[in-house]
Each structure stands twice: as structure tokens, then as C-alpha cells.
Length: 365
Image (cartoon, one colour):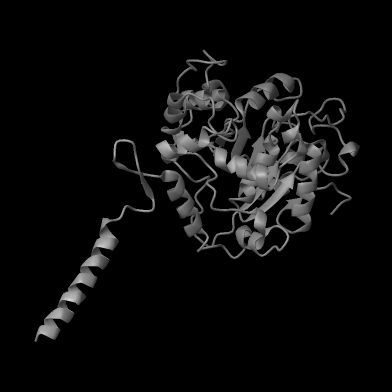
């Protein structure tokens, strides 16, 4: 009898220990704040959702192709969140991202401005796929002169989604570049420079049709401030763009039409795909960042199932003008803040690996 009671006691102790272990420990998705309250770490939650997405993939999944590529698979980390949204801001993310300057982090940015801007963003996803097995085909259209006379317009418009950026002139070039725009990517600086520099070439205003979604690249405080003003349909209240009206650039769009790339995503892309010797240059290293086109193309590569690139730099760039809409031929110019030659080698590698289709002109296939 005593033996049975002894064994029963051991059994009850083991069961109680298991239950205590299971239900009393804090979740792996939370951490303790300074006030002693568990706060969900939304950065990790977003990453977990991305990992869950990998379990259900379209038959044409680009992610699967990347993982099967022996030469490139170690470069890809699909768990890194592509976008910032309201859940991206937390005590932990603030502590981590203030260690790096924009566009790779939040160093030097006022906490109130970042928090206020991100609190207005609803979605953590670039687009909704619909059916899990749907094959989403994306075209990313740069502004390179290689597109002039290309006749690629109908091929571009035949994709499910079309990304454009900066001085995206459409009128007069429909046969070569198409008319469809799903996403327009930019920094506030590149957008305003495009409006100033290419006005005579036909870029008189940013694309504003109802179906367009805007992707901010957070290169500076002004991107957070401009986006916050746009989302609230207000004039910009501070900084370099004080008094500016975002509706002039975006129309009166609802919040769901706005996105902002995540600093962690830009940092990952730069380290894995776009790390240039210019980053360590003592004189100009602080200016270096990937080009707008590079960020848009790699965003598509991490969200779509098939990606075609048009108007990007190729090894025969000297045969074409800088932009397809140049009224007079202009050679491509290289500046210290980007490494376009390095980017061109990456596009060729991705094309040869079958991960993107790069338009290289009528003679090159």
C-alpha cells in the first residue's frame, strides 16, 4: 500500500511540474518591458508569419527556386520582414534599430516621429495573394534608355503587378514601357528630384491613378514625416518639406495604399546582395545606399513568384541613352552614392540563374 502511495505521489509531482513548465513561462514571442509588462515583439511575429507562408507555396514559387539554387541560396533570408507597419515599433525594435543610421535603421531619428508614422500603417504585406497556389507574375520597370524603341509595353502590362520608380514617364512611350502601375517606389528626395530634373522630358507629376500603391524607402526623417502627413491628409508640419501638401504627389489615397520598406530588409539586401566597396570609402561611404531600382527589384524578388526586369543597367549600357525618355541622348552617369556596375553584375547573375528575366535588348536574349 505504501509503495502504491509513493509511486502515486511521484506521478502527481511529475504531472504538476510539466503543467507548471508549460503554462507559467513567458512566451518566446514576448519580452519584459521596463514596467514589468509582457509586450509582444511584433518584429519576430512578422518573421514567424513569413516563415509560415513558406509552407504553402505556388507551384512556380521563386522562394523554392532560390532555395534550390546552390550558388545563391545562402544569400536569401525570406524571414526578414519586407515592410514596416504599426506592429513594427516596440521598445526592443527601437533599441536595435537606433544603432544604425537610415536607411538601415532609426539612428538620429526622433522616436515620436517614427512611432507616429508607423502607427498609421495597416498592412505588413505588400499585396494579398488570394489563392495560396496563385502564381504572381511581377514586372519591375526601370527608366533605362534600353527601353526606347523596345516594344515591350504589352509584355510589361501582361504581368499581374508592375513596379515603377522615380521619373516613370508613361505618356508617349506606352508601346515601349506599358501603362500599368501597381507600385510606385521612391524616397522623398528621389521623387522630388525626378519632378525637378525630368519635367521637360514629360515627368510633370507622380503617378496617381486609384489602383497605385506607394512604397516609401526610409532614407531620411523626411520620408517618415512626408508619409505621416500623406496618411492623415495634412500638410507637412516640420522639417525640410514643411508646408508641402502630400496630396500634390499622391492624391487623396486611403492608408491602405501606402507602404514603407523595413530598415532590417534594406540592411539585409545590402549585406547579402549589394555590398559595395564604396561602403567602406572614408570620404563617400556615408552616402552609399542601393539605388531605388535595386531596392524595388529585390522587393519584388522577395514577394512575387516570377520577376521580369526592364530598363535596368546591363553590360551594353553604353549603347543607350541614360533614360528612355531623354529628349537628347545622354550617357549614363555614375555617382558615388550608388554602385550601378556592381548592381548590373547582380542582375546578370540572377538572370543566368533563372531567378529573374532581365530584358537586355532585342539582340541579347
